[in-house]
Length: 191
Image (cartoon, rainbow, N blue to C red):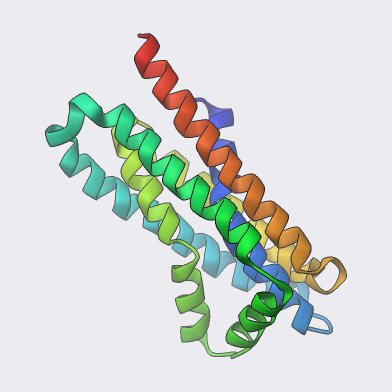
């Protein structure tokens, strides 16, 4: 995978956390930058750890599925991409309000739970990255940084932009995942 593909992947992986941050930002009249950055760092760290865990499992499984690894990567990316696109249409303003209420609790554990729930797709991507022979440390770092920036940005702009941006970002993230899976499949089949 090229640098640009990993960058697009990192941005795609951060879109669900971005959508949650936008919804959370709507409920805040104002949030100091340092507080938004702390939440962004928490989400970024969790989002960076989960692909590492997925990569470890994928690396272990690689010896059993090496002949079909490109199909597995394509299937995982297609499934996750379609799921993100579906969720972008499924969400309504009511759903945004539910996310807002659920994330309005100020406990650290609730923030951690929310960060984990938005990073489950990064776990599956980590499995796919093991099969695609990608430098997982670089990819996980990029995913973590992108998520940190997107969550911080989403919190700060939430009350100005609304949940509509979050839905569009998740849709775009889904398209990017499908594109990366398709490119991976094409590269393996054309060799």
